[in-house]
Length: 171
Image (cartoon, rainbow, N blue to C red; front, side):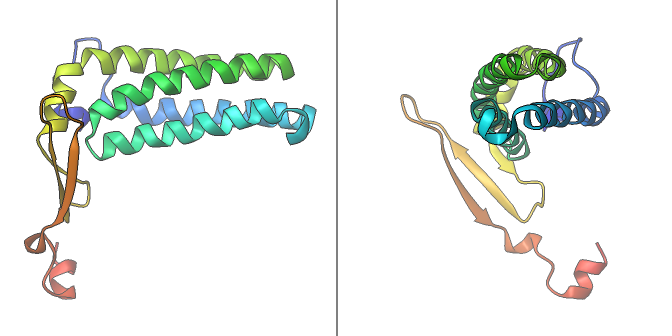
């Protein structure tokens, strides 16, 4: 999906996302561990609940891109940014180093928000067309009508499924 979009000249190459996210998840894990180790879940329940909320929101963002629903991804990334910022504030009150470990994550999400916003027309165009899921066994058809929400439906494509197990092995 990312490669299909009309990208600005400052967009990073797709291969960079894996290493960046690996480092960010490592920093997030260390930050949460610092807060939990110092205060426990009961002592820092708000901070840790915010932390888990941002993990969930981050997973949703990845799903929206995997499903080619870029318009939802654009809206969700703003919500994610706000939850990350709130988590940093809550972590700051519990463990300042933990809060600082989340700053690169917020910076990356700020960059991702700017990138997603710059891709706006391209994302909306692809989101409104017939979209293929990664497994290619079903397709998502999304249609937008003026002044109505996006409606999507999934349909199984029998021709895309192998007729026999042997046919599946030959792919």
